[in-house]
Structures are given as C-alpha cells and as structure tokens.
Image 1: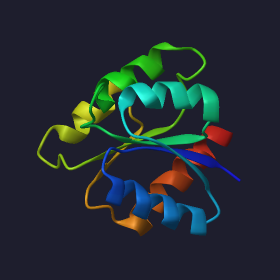
Image 2 (image 1 turned 60 degrees about the vertical axis):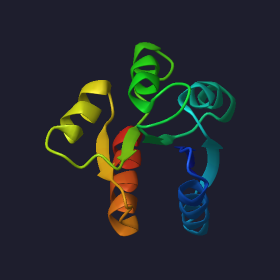
Image 3 (image 1 turned 90 degrees about the horizontal axis):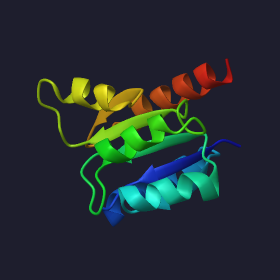
Image 4 (image 1 turned 120 degrees about the vertical axis):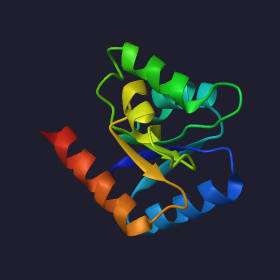
Length: 124
C-alpha cells in the first residue's frame, strides 16, 4: 500500500484529501508546514508527497529544494498542490524540484492520475 505525505496547512483540505486517498487504499501521513514535512519524510518514509507551496514556517518551494539536495530524498515524487494558477506558476513549481503541478481546487480524478503516473514511474 503506497504511502502519501500530504503537506497542507488548511485542515479542510488535508482532511478531505486524506479521507479520499485512504478510501482508495493509500496510507496517509500529514504535515502542516514545510519544516514538519522534512521531519515526516524521515519518520514516515512516504512513496509520494503532495506539497502545498504556501506554507507557514518553511514554504513548499524551499522544502522541495531541500528534499532534492538530499540524496536520500532526491528522487521522491512530489506534486505541487497550489492555488497559484497563473502563467509561470507551474514552471516555478517544476524549477523548485516538483515532478508535477496541480492547481486547487483539487480535481480528484486528475490528481489520482498524476499520483498513479508518478508512482508507476518511480517503480521503474
């Protein structure tokens, strides 16, 4: 059962996502800021991260950059979850090291396709 780390500071968002993902058979861990996400990656060993980019303490862009510089987490699939849907926002997420970008509000079927695609690619 793949484990997904949801990094999200909005309780409604992480609650909805975690319940829907668990119903699909995923194990879920939650971090409410970027610093907690860095700690949870080591403790929870997720297979994929859903990273909100606007977070307190340490934002998602910096948390992603730090994960990418660590050889132990450099290849961990990360999907940016963000309300930023303007031109250039997807490129900014990818430049920070995210593998994909998903604009809120979440389109769950599309997000599942993104998750499945990245998990399959990670399996090789």
